[in-house]
View 1 (cartoon, rainbow, N blue to C red):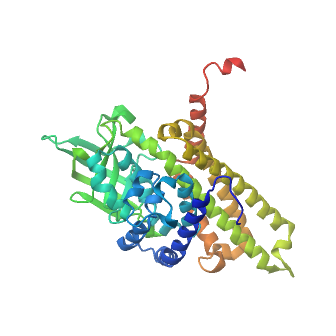
View 2 (tube, helix red, strand yellow; view 1 turned 120 degrees about the horizontal axis):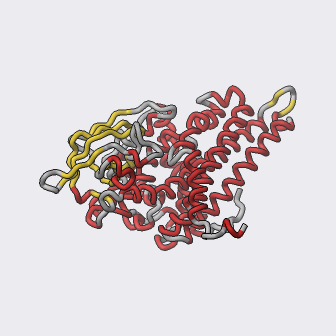
View 3 (cartoon, rainbow, N blue to C red; view 1 turned 135 degrees about the vertical axis):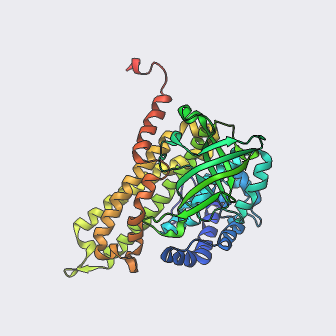
Length: 417
């Protein structure tokens, strides 16, 4: 709307302008075709994003900015960059409302790069990370299995040391791994301890695509452009140097990455929902029914008002959380923001259900059609459950929010009530 923000500085406006221009000129047409045809993104497309800096600014790792070859979008300096800049990039991408293609060019590095950077040995980071940021190699996070989703501690993929001690031998499967069909690197949760050890027996390995690694497509309700995969590891040899963090301490590495993942989901979903409201509003003004525009009907105005109230409220909450991310270090974010981000995620998806339902009612048959004015609403409705499940289900998010609140509650507070 062109209004001022208490959080934005001049660099944010310059950055936003550059990001939006790049998306409109270089990505929009290609991503639309990929989403419609269900075609996976090319390596060249990744390289184009990497050269521009679009990968580096979205991974939640300021240290990755040094690998952008041509400087940051908008000419901003690395020392000026913060999480608000990252939020702007997520919003600009999400607003195009091409869920499958967008995940195809985003999901893997958004959640797979940070564990490599934060927990990999220096030589491993230097070996693998720059190529990912440039778009020359592609990475994804491989945690989920057929029997382990939100309950990460139930991972059953096994990694055992070779007799020579130089390798882990990995056997097992992963399921619903976004970008898995075309990625080069898999940040993979494996069991190095006993099954009864639960979370304390989990490790995190960086596995390269190669002998023993097989991937196949999983059909989903949105576009195959996302590259959703079933992965089989059959006696895969992984150098022990590719261990991320400490052996049997991988659960901590996985959990520390969730704040960024969930915040990115929130940002994207709020931006998508805002676009859907915009489409519904435009249609309500244009559409004539019973001799009057739809917007003349009180019930339609009430639906639009409810949609705007809900989304702008959760949007303001999310803006506040992003601002806190700018002011806290990694450990403080984990302690103070894990609960609020989780609760915000649950609320964001609840709002999206309501907005999607109302928008479909306002557009009528067009809201169910994959072409024309209703295509954005139809895509939104088709992918609406992804945000409610990925990164942790709503039920898990609510429980986590309250557990974090209890964990940080001062001792003796209950007795004082």
